[in-house]
Image (cartoon, rainbow, N blue to C red; front, side, top):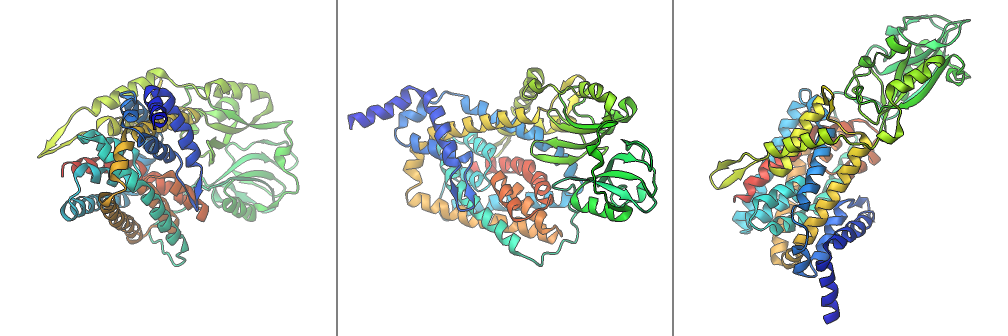
Length: 532
């Protein structure tokens, strides 16, 4: 007994060791697959709860304020990435957004009324549970900040989170199985999920603007070789004549339609010849170019060159004129061979800069986020504020939309953004798990915990069904509905599962439409639930 007690005391005496052993073990646990489900970063929360449950002193030893820092890094980096998508989708998807807000409010009412009136559960537990069935980490922080005992909110969250992941995946699987889904008002599939490049032997005369997909930016031409002439960058392409060759870039369907309209696929690829026209992926590390569109680069006027693709993280994007570029993009450029060095220098192409973070812009952005989180609005017994969760998130969404202000570039390189986001999330979840573990052990495995589970189960089914119904009534496609549900719940594991069931870019655009909005609405609802 003394040995076990001294062993648990070791974790309390050395909190930094404890923190990072929880992060390591929790990350390993998050990789374990339970059928189609993996907990991911949430594995850190559950390992933290397990260790924190061993002794109350373990949670008390966690460094004060560390969870706030972790959360701020997480929500700020999420906001920078989600902001542009939110504002872009605001007008075309306004009806869907309003429907999602209504569904979240109805869910909050269900959690609050059923939990407090039927089962007599206090507000902090219900608020944490509401955050759990919404898998929203910032919501958990808001629930804890509004509660007298933060461990109560964490207990509710830990009960609701795994329930949400399993139920949402079942909903997505059910949607994927429906084959008669109609989509009256769906905006379309958008950008292709993958890009291909094909060389075409032109056999029929055509104006480039008349080729299917050319006018709406779904198809680009990168290199053109007139009959009997030398290859050249396909700038200001007008007419194509029999005997010409042209390189088409776009999604598989768009390229196939372009090939059919112009002639036939050539037996040899024009890009294999690089003596006149060179092409390569160039890393964008020049901060002066971040936040500019492809057309604003002026590649044609400056160098006689043309961008055709942009590699951003794991995604290939077609380089249409209005595409906004960001640091760490890899831009594929077709250019005269003798201008290759100039074009490369223009983009920067410095590998060492892809993980650099501007301390000035990030510091100002986070400071502004904390500042707007300070004001409070009192409604009866409820105090509403953006706080340390929503304040940095809202500010980052706005800055992500602005992208740059003079010399200040607000957005982060993709790799730096993802790294900071992961570090922040892991630190926050480890702190929450350790500080709440002992209370979770006391409350979760009891009749009280069963009552809370019933409340969250009923509310989660109601919530997800309402969101699917909203999407269906508004004429959204099956693929977009799956993405909307994933964004509504706010869990990337659900998005990954949806993408495994259907190959359609509308899954990801649907997720981006609701992800940030749902977090903000949940934070407001959570603060109202705490006041019950």
